[in-house]
Structure formats: C-alpha cells, structure tokens
Image (cartoon, rainbow, N blue to C red; front, side, top):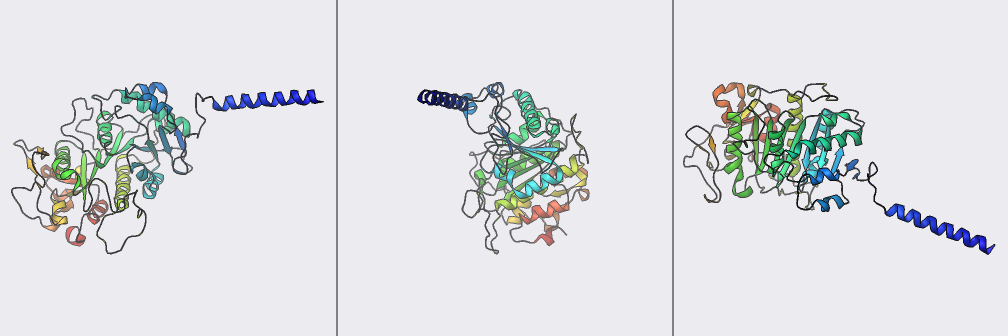
Length: 412
C-alpha cells in the first residue's frame, strides 16, 4: 500500500514539474488577446523580431523583451469592415485622445479603426532620410491588425495620422512617404510640417491633404507664429494641401488647465472661466476627423482588396481664416509675419530674435473679414489664408479662439 502511494506521489511531483516548466517556457507566438489593455484596447500584439531589428534602433532587445504590446488596436463595436485607420505613436496624452469618447463616436460612425503604435521606433519614419524601412514595417503592422481583428480592410485602408511633441514628425512625414494613403494629419502640440518638403518626399502638389496644427499661445517661445504659421501658409499657397492652425490661449506645450495627469481632469470647472480645456480641443479634433472623412473618403467604400482612391477637395469649397485672426481675436499686437522676394513665407529664427517678435507694421482687421467663405476671396489670394472645411467647423474654431466671445460679429 505504502509503495503504491509513494509511486503515485512521484507521478504527481513529476507532473507538477512538467507543468511548471511548460508555464515558464516563453511562447513563440503569444495567444490572441495576451497583450490587450481592456476595456479600451481589445487587441494587442508584439511585432516580429525581424521587424524591430530592421529599424536599427539602439536597444532592440529592450523592446523585444518588454511585456507590453508593441501595437494596440480598437475597432468600432460589432464592426466587420472599416473604411479608414486613425494611427499615432506613443507620447503622453495621445493615447487618451485615442480613447476619448468624441473621437470614438466619430470613429464608430465613420467606420474607422484606431491603431496605437505603442512601441514604434523613431527611425521608422521620423528620423530616417528617406524612411525606406517604413514600407515593410507598416505593411507588417497592418497585416497583423487585419489578422488579429479579422478585418481585412486594415491592409489597404487610408490613414489619418496624429502626433505630438517629440513624435510630432510622424503625421507629416508619413504623408510625405505615403501621400496616396493619408486622408488628413494632425499635429497636437508637435512639430510643424517643414517647408520645403524633403527631396525624398513622394507627395506632390496635387493631393488635398487636410492638416491641423494645434499650439499654445506661449508654446516654445511662440512657435505658432515663428514656424507653424509660415509653414502652413507655404503649403496653402504652393500646394493643394488644406491647412489650418489653432492657437490656444493660456496654454504652453500642451499643459492645459485640466491636463490628463492633473486631478481635475474630466471634472467640472467654474462656468465663468475663459480657459480652454484639453477636451475642448479633443472635441474639435474629433470634428476635424469627421469632416476629413466626409470630404476625402468615398461613401460606402471598403478597401477590402485594394486601396481607396481618395477624393481631392477644392479650396473654394471651404472657409478661410485670416492669418492675423489669432492676434485679432486674442487681443494681441501683431507678431512677425514675413515673406521673401518670391512671396514665400519665412520662419522667424529662434533664439536669434528674442521673444516676443512683433511685426514692424501694426494694424487691425475688421472682424467681419477674419473668417469668410473661400468663394468670397479671389482665387489667387486664397492660399494666403488658413482653410477649414465649412461654416460648422469655422464656428467651432472660432469658439476656441474668441477670448471675448463675439462670434456673431466675426461670422454671421
């Protein structure tokens, strides 16, 4: 009897050892859902070793051994197909924007999948000239998105790109390399699209890429007028891109009064305050994404087997915002706005010219001339303005810039 019990005990111990060894052995391919971050990101996965190593980053093993997902994915509830992809790399509150209710409501209505590139090396697109490794990397990521979600359209769907701060190059350099793929781009407190484009850029002057740059009034010693305004005006005057900027009062480098790490994030504020909340801007970005989908993606188009052919938008169809509107609406003196002999807009060098850099000529613009239908402006002058899609978006823009709240005097 005791001998039989001893044998049984040995068998049980051996079984536990085998099970323990099996549990400790790393899986060659994680099971579906292992890297999900519920409830916001129901799909997550690691990238193949060969993909990560192809980036030539300094410490690939650190990423390969990380327990966190390289890519996280969300799709609209019950979605069987998608029409587009919103994608962004990892930087502070970008992931919160991707999780924000208004963004996801638009994504659900417009059938947009959201891809959070949680561990994407900067050398894929932002710090390579030219970014040739991006071709295979993006193809691999989107093929895995399609495989993990069961939604084939990820492989060919057009993109809306978003970036911030040190990842602020991601939106526009993605457009330069994949111009036929990008519906619109957003720089949320990030670097402006450089002008001129790099020589390797595949983007021509015919694509009507919609672009939005958001900066704080005091951000980076006035980057909104030193770099962003002249660059966007160059795109508007010399290409078919349709760009505009937001200049947020009381904000520097993305630190809103209710920044996502502050204890008052998502909580009510006094009704009398004149500050712009981060969620006010996120709401506007949701509207921008919605308009971009309406204007550039054909109705009922599903890129199941081949890419979507994006629609081009005519500049005369939208509304124009005077480049001096930020100063006029925020009650400021005019900041420097310069052009060279050929009419190209010039950046204001920093730190060569000490902040603030005011224009040598001051003046005022009639409130009624700050925003107007593009059709009311001569064709040859339209590029000298910021562009928004329609009156609804113009009013939403105005609400975030009219410190003294007089929208009826600006846009009737």
